[in-house]
Length: 239
Image (cartoon, rainbow, N blue to C red; front, side, top):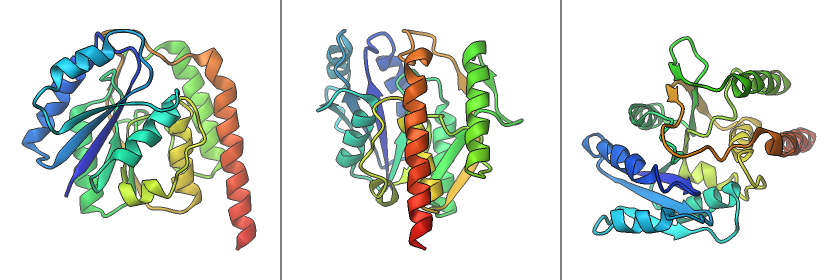
């Protein structure tokens, strides 16, 4: 089996080397993998730091995004991936490498199309989640859960794993920003692909600053929500 890890990066000069070093620990558990970094028009030393670090590391590839935006960066990474499974992993290292290994073992063992992590399980451990962001997250995700009659409660979580052939069927990605992480699981749900939900741990970044801007993203999340609702209606009418 094999795994592609897609990491979109924007102005992560202080964090990216730490993230890559920690990710390389998976070599003990996953031998056949690649890391695909998509530089989304960074304006700091992110690209320089990456290039210096990945010298002689053939399993780490760096590409420039061809159209600015997180959604475009992820689609670029998907199209460049060469392995059977694809995991989206954020550069801020807020997610746990141990959970990545857990995802990989589960997606193979259970032969499913996707593995969705939830940070909001009784078995999850969360550190330093901003209060305002937490409240808005819970309100929005539970609203989506009810709207789509789903048992999943963390749609907007970025950290997920997919079978590549299934993921390619979800393209093109229409979301431009963090709302891409709502679009992909909703498409899995609407098109009735199989998925597993597993509890994961999360901790707030220790270096750099978040690119997530609540005020700027509200309308984008609503756009994605209505887009997916429209797709659900259209698919239902075809039956």
